[in-house]
Structures are given as structure tokens and as C-alpha cells.
Amino acid sequence: MEEILYKSTRSHQAPIKASEAILKGLSGDGGLFVPERIPALDVDLKTLSRMSYKEVAYEVMKLYLTDFTEAELRNCIDRAYDSKFDTEEIAPLTAAAGAYYLELFHGATIAFKDMALSILPHLMITSARKNQVKDDIVILTATSGDTGKAALAGFAGVEGTKIIVFYPKHGVSPIQEKQMVTQKGYNAYVVGITGNFDDAQTGVKKLFNDEELGKEMAAAGFRFSSANSINIGRLVPQIVYYVYAYTRLLAAGKAAEDEPINVVVPTGNFGNILAAFYAKNMGLPIRKLICASNENKVLYDFFAEGTYDRNREFVLTSSPSMDILISSNLERLIYRISGDDADKTAAFMAALGREGRYEITPEMRARLGDFYGGYATEKETAAAIKRIYDDCGYVIDTHTAVAASVYESYKARSKDETKTVIASTASPFKFTRSVMNAIDGNYDALDDFALADELSRLSGVAVPAAIEEIRTAPVLHTRVCGRDEMKDVVKEFLGLS
Ligand SMILES: *Cc1c(COP(=O)(O)O)cnc(C)c1O
Picture 1 (cartoon, rainbow, N blue to C red):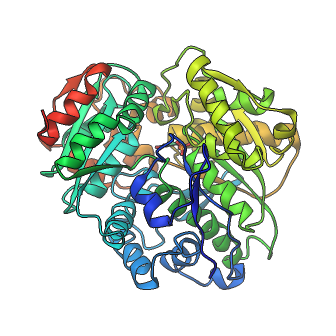
Picture 2 (tube, rainbow, N blue to C red):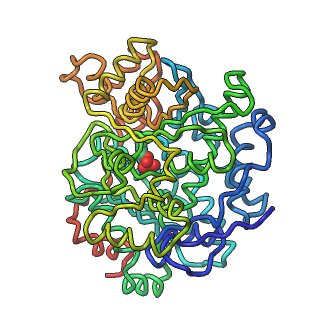
């Protein structure tokens, strides 16, 4: 197997091994690590269609994590995709209302971040051992709701790690907040910030680049790493389920060999859809990558006009995990369509930091033909939930509904009848109130748990264990800070102040 090294999107520093990129998270120059080239699948789809999720995961991930031994990688996969998931399929594919829903919510926190965050701690610990790192790894994460709990669930109690999660105090759902603030584990710390997700993410990025803090930490035996979707240890496991989904269609006789499919992804930080783009570039027969945004439609505008512009009002929607104005992972696509030009990418990102916008060149725009950008309003999102429920009794969450709505309008406009997989990124039980209100708005008097019982009755699906557990769990984290206090909070938690 050919070795794949990772380079930064923003400079010409010497490329590093996968395990080093996983440990570092973000490049020292502020750039994101990208593989020097995207490897091709080396097992045919027919053979993959006879494999389990774990086996497919190995066949995909081995191509990217080339400095992991087979035993190391298989061990990480075995520890991640076990009984934490409520089905052995790990990511089942459900046909409903004219599309295939790839259910990425069967893990510990019933949302798709579990797919990568259940394996990341193991990839990190393995990477640390391989690189003789003796420091404790401090995971610093900004979350718009789901990443936080999924990272906490992955890292809590993992020896040699600490995890600090910042979330927008008024920007996550009540169930999301309850999931985080009830987190157990001596090594876990959860803090609300008085700001939105972008404030939290910008603050975290600043801390990563704070040299003075880095030195203080090193002296005390700590080093930062990132569990955010910028870490290639997050990106690579996400490629797996697109390959898996395709091979399940093949196995079920729903797709002919090499028949192209479309993929629709409800998008925020651009991590999930970037993984689908990588899968396509590995040789998976994907025709269109349909990028679905909510009313924070910065990506829709980008695909329509070639200008990325975050200077706009931030809208709080019923799909909070997509309420994002800076889609960090887009940088990897920008790098690619610039022809792997680090100087150009760095200049765009500098403009984004300075002016909040940048405009790509016509040549770059011409390379975006694989993508279709769409968005759904709040009304359209709710209507999609109701339509699909009325149509076949299948209940989807608000994020997935953004994708379903965008897919519906794409199909009406394009007449494209290609078989389509929609990434279903959260269980409807995670956003129960919005989901129930969309189906029929008569539930205002019920609390979130009573609502979950009602949704269970309506959908015929049992209330997931992740919800049952927090019904009675005590709140363990109450700290709230301003966005200027994040550094103090980190130092306090690490005993550095
Ligand atoms: C994080 C998240 C998204 C957005 O995924 P990105 O990789 O950030 O684009 C969509 N839906 C849910 C439920 C999420 O948690």
C-alpha cells in the first residue's frame, strides 16, 4: 500500500504522517490537514457489499491511515463500533418516500457525530503511543450541540485524555444541553458561553494558536488536540458510511453494479458532505453531491454565486447543528479546487478573517460541478417532516428534513431520477418538540420527556436509551463564561492559573 502523508491547506510545511495529523488536529499555520492525494478504493464494490460495517471501515480507513498497522486499526474499529450502537448494521439504510435514508444516529448520542467520535479517542491514543507522546491530550471542542456530547461520550474516562467542551448557552436544544451538563467523568468539563457557535469556534481556534498558552501547557505535561470536524481522524471515519450505503444498495439489488447515486447531506461545518466528496473521488459512483442548508444559507449562496460571505444575520433555526456561518471544512474543498494551492487558500482564509468574505475565481467555480446547493426555510423543513410522516409513517428529525426538502425541490427542478441517499443525521427523538410540532402542533403543554413518549407512540419506535438515561440524571456542569474568558476557564480546569 502506498503511504499517504498529510499537508496543510495554508503553507508548504513538510507533510506529516496520519498519526501525527490526528494528534495535531490543526496545522500550526492555522490550515487544515489534507491527504496529499485521495486514494482509490482497492477492493471492488461487489466484494465490499458482502462485508460488515467494521470490515468496510477497515478497507476504507487503511487507505488513509497508512502508518497504522492492521492490528492497530482493526483494534480501533472494534472498540468503536460495538454495542454502543443499537444495531449491528451500525448505519442502516431505510427506504421511505422515494429516497434512501442512511441512518447515522444509532450511536451513544443518537446523532451522526457518534460515527466518528466513537473511534477518534482510539485513533488518538494509538497515534500518541506511536509517536512516543507522554503528555496528556487535552481535547478542546466548540459545539453547536451534537459534537459536544458525542465527544464527551467518546473521551470521558479515557486514560491520558481530558476534554473541555464550549457550547453556546442559548443556542442548543434543551435535550442537547441536558445531555452535556449531565456528563460524568473525572476528565470532562462542560462550559456554556454567552455567544453563538461561531464565537465558541473562533475562541477555540484562538486558544489552539496561543503560543504562550501552548508553552505553559507543555511545561505542565499537556498538549491540545481537536475533536472538531477539522481533525482528519473525524473526516476519514465519515467516508466509510457512504461506501457502506452504496454497497448495501448493491447487496439488496437496489442498485446495479456501478450505477451512480446522488447523495444529499444536511450541512453545517461541511465535514459530512466533504467525506462524501472524498468517497466520490475514491471511485464510489456518486453523481451529484447535494448540499442542503437551513436559513443560514451561506453555502447555498457560495454555490450559486462563488462568493462566501459570512456578513449576514445569524438565524436560530430548528436545526441548530447547522446554524453555522463559517463552515470550517469548506477550506479543504477550496484548497482542492484551487489546484492544491496553499498560498491561494491562505489568502482566501485571511480575507475571510479580515472582511468576512472571499470570492473564488471562475476556474475554481468551474470545478464545483459535482455539487448542487439548496436550502430550506423553517416552514419547508416542517412541511417535509409532515409530508413524509403522512406518506409512510416514517419520522425524520429537523436536520434530515432540511435535506429531504432540498432533495424534493432539486428533483422537481432537475427531473433527475437518480437513486438518492439522504444522510439522516439525527434521531427525531433528539429534536422532539420541533418534530412533533411539525406533525401536528398540539403539544405545547408537554415537557420534553412526555413529548418523547408521545413521539414513540406515534412512530412506533421505542424511546432511545440516550434519552431515557437523562430523564433523571443530575446536572453536574453549571459554568457559564463570556467569550473573552475562555482562556481563563481552560487554565483553571488544567490547574495552570
Ligand atoms: C453536525 C450536524 C450536521 C452538520 O454536519 P457538518 O459535518 O457540520 O456539515 C447536521 N446534522 C446534525 C444532526 C449534526 O449534528
